[in-house]
Length: 272
Ligand SMILES: Nc1ncnc2c1ncn2[C@@H]1O[C@H](COP(=O)(O)OP(=O)(O)OP(=O)(O)O)[C@@H](O)[C@H]1O
Ligand SMILES: [Mg+2]
Image (tube, rainbow, N blue to C red):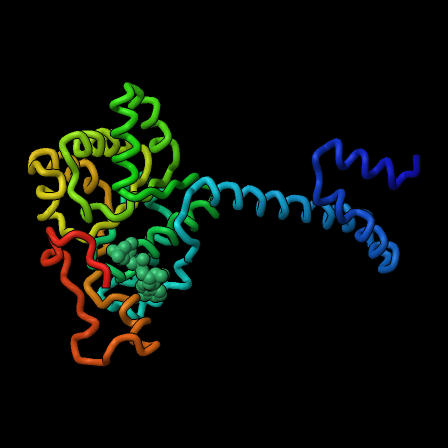
């Protein structure tokens, strides 16, 4: 067996697949450039470490069920002047994840609530935290099914495990009694243990109607807001702006105005 063949066997046995793939090219270059052995070895192992990190991030991202991948750098803050830049900078530090505190994005359709939630989840994943994304509707439907089948506790664990749980589109559809009870259980169980990033088109005052019961709404909000940051976005829909740009909408004053969260209450999901 040649020494190169032995090297490949050893690298493959140790599971160093990236190093195995690039070792010969590294050795050739090293011979040509007359590089020190330690440099060559270090470069080779760096490649392996990098490849592993990329693989780990891909897996974590896939497990998070994000609806799309967008980052904070892709978010145009100048389009939404109601957002306090300092607040976003603070969220970016991910201190809220370390402290298991919550982030709530409130605002009308198209202002970037889901984009910002996904971007924070992406940052959290890059920092090594687990994240999971689900809409409020799917969450309650899934846990409702588990409850009826007598396995709510086991199923809840899926939503308790990730350090960051994104619950999107709270309030677009009202919850029934079971939905409200399940939501309360989830928020209580995650309280001071893991962050919830939540988006809603309803202001807090309207949550009584969302849960069909002001008492349970108060109990949920009490836990959710105790350690939390609320980002209230009052502005134009980015979707409408884009349509206007490509000429699908007439340019009339106020055409970019969408209902405020309060006015949108009870209207269901308003899609432009
Ligand atoms: N300020 C922004 N800069 C860049 N892209 C933006 C901005 N705001 C929104 N977008 C983009 O516009 C689209 C709509 O944003 P998003 O889905 O986050 O809105 P939303 O507030 O969640 O709306 P809805 O309540 O209808 O779900 C997305 O493609 C998002 O990436
Ligand atoms: Mg959204």
